[in-house]
Amino acid sequence: MPAGWRAFPHGQDQALFIHLLRVRFLGRLLVGLLVRLLPILTLLLLALLALTLLLVTVLLGLLRIAVLGIVHR
Image (cartoon, rainbow, N blue to C red; front, side, top):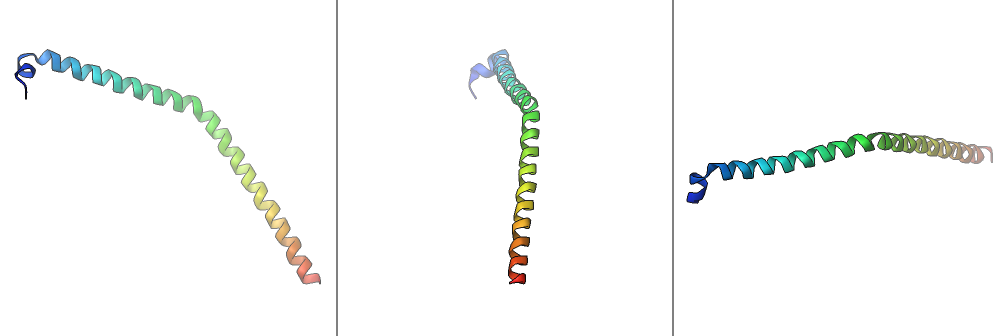
């Protein structure tokens, strides 16, 4: 450990404080982006769910037509 760190603990405190400010800034930025994007992500998830249900319904209908077509031949 350099002698400067023991002789000037204020410099070490400043370095830690600056690091803490940077981490806090990045944390707030990420939380802000998440809060702003949350409604968009929710709508995208609902749209994906609706498309999945539509696809399942169409595939079940096609399967029913295929099975009934095979049975009635």
